[in-house]
Amino acid sequence: QVPVVESGGGLVPAGGSLRLSCAASGTMFSILTMGWHRQAPGKQRELVAVITRGGYTNYADSVKGRFTISRDNAKNTVYLQMNSLKPEDAAVYYCKVSNAGGRDYWGQGTQVTVSS
Image (cartoon, rainbow, N blue to C red; front, side, top):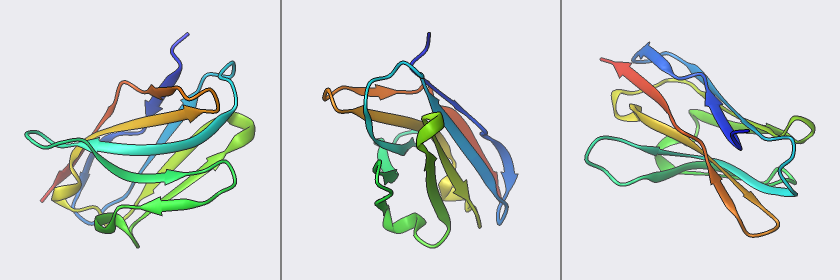
């Protein structure tokens, strides 16, 4: 069973919205933080947003006010609502899940394309 699976990417015009979802395996032990990173061609992977089990959130400055991260602990699922998308938001978005055992799990990535 794949530990982490993302969904929800796609093509959207500038100014549009997308909602990404990431489901962690139900057998995963004591999930602490869940977050989203992204990587555009020729650039390093960067943090987009992260949320703790208690609901504390942190965002990259470039997405503050436009993106919202949330999670459903009962479903081991994290969401990223992306509004007012810009061409510079285009990237492969990766979900990262960290558990109490100190392990990090990455999803396979989902492509977000923003047309100008």
